Length: 212
Image (cartoon, rainbow, N blue to C red; front, side, top):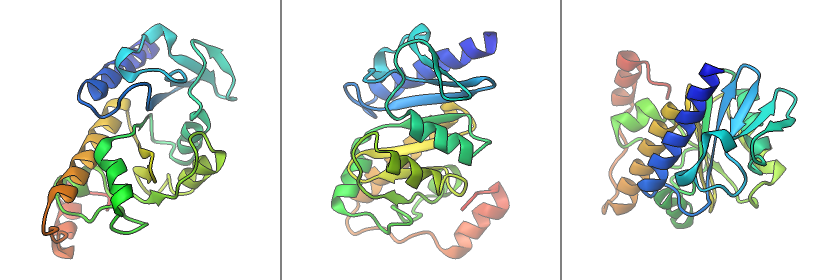
């Protein structure tokens, strides 16, 4: 129970940090964490800036809601990612401004929404595919993400924003922040910067074990 309480506190701390810095607004976005006996996920229509550890929804391994407030409508999305990416322990979905703007302006490529323009983008984020528009909570959107979850660390929903998964909620937030910052850099650059060379990316793979 002590370990679970630490995860509850981590979800609330990360949620408040993202909200206070404008990565999410209002009651948008959701966060989840894998436990040994199920999952924790933020309640439906909860503000990430005002989460209560005791009110986080707990769901068992069979998907049954067992305690806390009603789970987010994106529960199926989170469960699909965890099943496809067993090493992942934390997932964050936000409506981050620059990443949503990127989908409106036009991404670099459908299989890679941003070119590799910074070393930390390559090291901490990797390739991020675009998931075509579907309404919030659509089961097909969850299936689309689950299909790529074993190969990447995140995906970008058209008009909705990013979902990122990592070895903890905190690490998912680091990757999400790096991705949002890269989108901001890309959108504000004129002319657009050239991608890192194949040689530079290979150097990051060899030196830092980058998954790209």
